[in-house]
Image 1 (tube, one colour):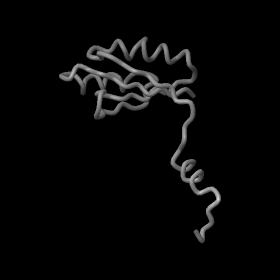
Image 2 (image 1 turned 135 degrees about the vertical axis):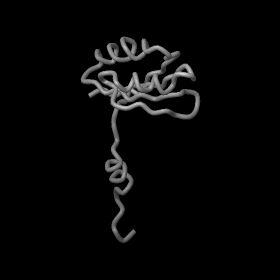
Image 3 (image 1 turned 120 degrees about the vertical axis):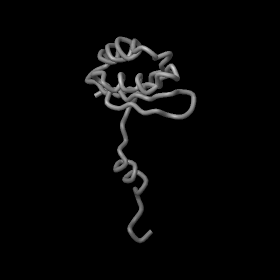
Image 4 (image 1 turned 45 degrees about the vertical axis):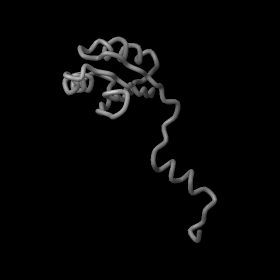
Length: 95
């Protein structure tokens, strides 16, 4: 599975509609409104890298109201469980 995090600048007057349209695209698992430089963040999860090109530049970037995107590809996923285990290495219950 390939995961891409897409930061999106959208037309301010259309953010809810843009977010909803993006959320309905195949390959998009979640869309969040966020603070900071970008308006939205979309999580894209697909089987292989070729599908990234279909989803992001092929469909997401073409949604009316999307002004700019910045895409980051995730190398590895860490669940909360994995992080808790990593930080507790070498510690006993008595510590």
